[in-house]
Amino acid sequence: MTEQEKAKEWYSNQQLYEMMVDLSKKLEKTNTEMAKTQTMIRDYNGLRARLDRCEKDVAHVVAAGKGGKEMWGYIVGAIGVVSLIVSMIANY
Image (tube, rainbow, N blue to C red; front, side, top):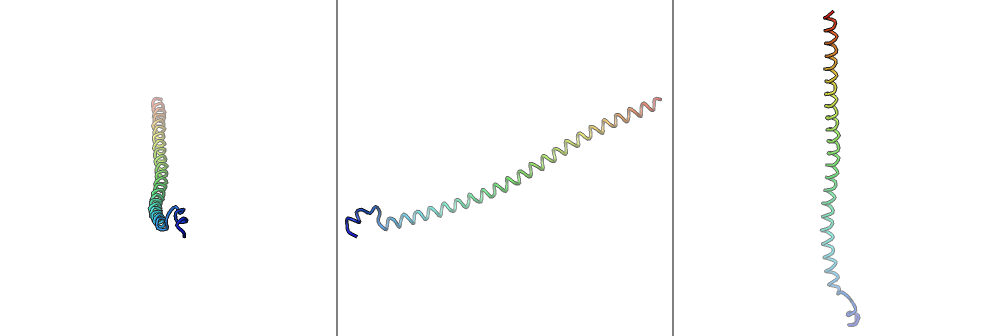
């Protein structure tokens, strides 16, 4: 290479090599961060699925509790009706 051709070059071979090494280090760091992010997303998705199941179970338990309370209302009402009938029969 002549001096004019060297002057036209933007970077020397050493500078290009150093830039490639620096870029390689940055890519390794980025890959490590992406692996961590991927793990965090997988863990989040697992937690989200567990939370959905827990919410469904809680809704089921609450619905069962409400049904039980309504049932006791019917039982108390039926006892009242039965006692009314028994008292009417006893008064005859």
